[in-house]
Image (tube, rainbow, N blue to C red; front, side, top):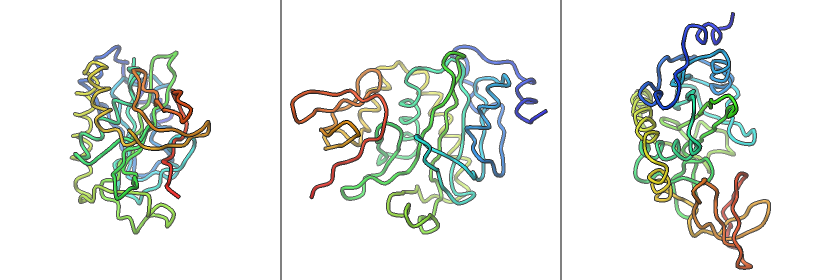
Length: 251
């Protein structure tokens, strides 16, 4: 029997919002794993309770949205996946705000799932969020990768110009995890409108020219469902539910 199956059978799922006071228990820490999200999904399928946490020192196949790879030197980042039962609809937005709570006042959110720092006119990626699950079964896995102690020179050359780090000592990874779990628990208890207001206060794209696969326009915040609103040049408005959005560069 796999470790995931053993843990799942040993626990009773927690229903409803009770998980907010039990985030991070039980916890599985892995020295190296292909993906904490994949391991947490196994735990979910095996019946592990809401609040179960999977962390790792290193991931060999960490990923973000649309299959992009998440790369970080071993022991330099907070790599975690949290299992939530009966997750709220705004879970990715809640997670983004909680990460910003921990990352500091300069942290911003680039829709839909990146935490960034503004440097000059560019946005440097500090953290990524990936929520996966089975809504019909009432669970989701929330994956977060946060560059706590990453030395940018150790990253692949193609990432060095687009990445950011908190530049904290490696000993700060565990305390940062504890603060993030506290922030998540607090934000999960807040009403949706309060979460949306907090998200909008950190919006990195608001008022900026953006492009996506369907066109171009100016980002105009998010609606109550977390969709990005874009004002098009023809005067219309588009509500984007998913996909990549890029800042328009000035020729």
